[in-house]
Image (cartoon, rainbow, N blue to C red; front, side, top):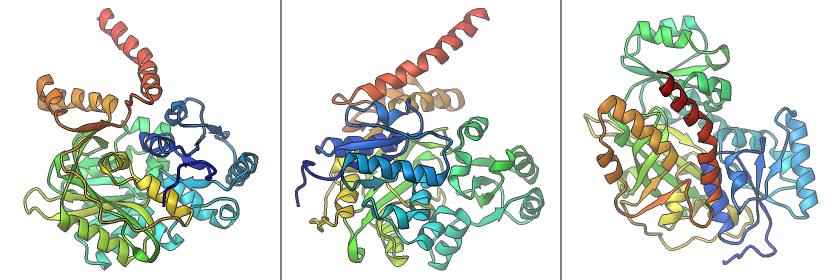
Length: 406
């Protein structure tokens, strides 16, 4: 089925990240009208030429937020498609699905499935029950529980939020240096690092660390449609992250082809009855070579635009599926070795790698060789990248000023 966007429902895209920008571009290039749901007027996707932003005040209640969305949909005059790009969006849609489904199209798994995937301790229990290879994981919400865990867990280990968005609050994220995990090499460090967390960030899991570097991180992207039909699996490998050492999001990744890993991810998502797009995140054990499952993102994930560039457009599949217009395609083929680059974030990764590991400028630049696509820069939609660069000017100027004073 071919849809050119004319007369078709508007896509409402949640989120302020590169992930959301990727969705906006994928759909906008197909002629589909896209509205980005923003809490602030300077958020990245709102600068895209493919986006018509909708601003909702950040301090409204959840019911007021729902009312604002519905009012916008009525004003637009159609029944829009809702597309989440973050865990907060998934939780919001799941909690309010009854009222939202009266005014919007969307695809969403059952609440029990989503709750099990959104919470890392529940996911660990589910994955273990399904005989997936997972690292040992313990949940904790206070210092006494951390002390008990420190007596049993093997070191090194990592601290992660039980529910990822609890560390995505701007104040908390800045205090943590935008780290997704905190590494601990001893019981004393575990107690110290946990004790330094903000009280709102102390609902965590403690997980044994899987040996390996950034390039041991892999994702399998899947899309499960009606009747658990697969609409294409896609594999990728992270080459660099920011913060580095796998403590942050991927800044340089490449498409790969790993059928065995893909089958593990697809079989698991089918077995639990999942519906829609998801990313099953793995880390390959550096000593044994075993692929171990870390977590599942129950939504479109950051690097979906790489899959779209390679021929599997998960954002468009979600749009079609929401309308009941999806059809099983022939088994899609894609090329391995295509790179996805978040240029500005990768500069930060290079800076940190150079400081900690002595990464040479020429080596960093050489890693861009070969077929590639950029997450932030785009010739047909340059303004989000330009705005990011403009936003960096004050901080760069401050650093230059500090350097001169010295």
